[in-house]
Length: 239
Image 1 (cartoon, rainbow, N blue to C red):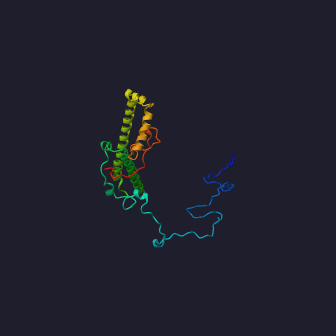
Image 2 (image 1 turned 180 degrees about the horizontal axis):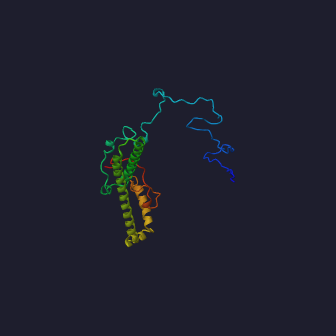
Image 3 (image 1 turned 90 degrees about the vertical axis):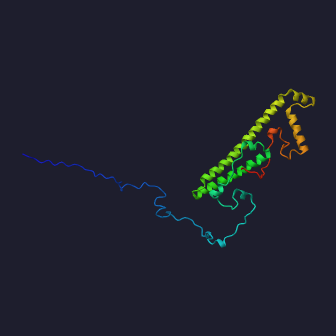
C-alpha cells in the first residue's frame, strides 16, 4: 500500500537591496542639497535687499589710481616694468665677481654689493614665480644661469669677510700676547687691548675716519661689534 507524504518547506527570498519597510534613520541636515543638481538649500536664507556692486567693464570709465613713478619698489622690475623678462634679456649678464677681485674692495663696497645681489635675486625669483604661474614655458635655463652668477658673487663676499675676520682675530691675539705691546700699555697706564680699541674709536671720530667707514659706531665695545652701514648702491655691480 502506497502512501503519499507531502513535505512543506519554508523558503525566504534573497535580495541584495535594503528593505524599505524600516524607519529612516538618516539625520543628515544636508540631505537633498546638491551643488551639481543646483537644488539649493532646504530652507530659505536671509539675504539683504541692498544692491550688489557691479564691476566696471569699460576701462575708460574706471577710476585711475595715482602711482608714484619714483617708488622704491620699481627697482624690483626691469626698465619696461614687465611682469617677467624675455630669455634674451635675462641671459644678458656678465660673469660673477671672483674672490681675488673682492679682496681689494672696502667694507663699504662689499656691503653695498651684497645688497645689490640681494635685490637682484629678489627680482629674479619674483619673475620666476610669475613665469610659473603664467605657464610661459620659457626662461628656466636663463634664470638658473643668472641666479647662479649672483649666488657665486654673494658666496665670494662671505668668503672675503670670513678671511678678514680671521685675520683680525689672529692679529688681535698676537697683540695681546706680545710682551712689548703689554709693556707699552703698562707704561701709558692702559690695562689691556680693549682700552686701546676704545681710544682708537675716539681718535677715529676726531680725525674723521668714522665717516670713511673704518669705524662706524662709537658705542661698539670692540671692532668685532661694529654694525653694518646702511646699504647704498654702487656703480660697480656683479660683472
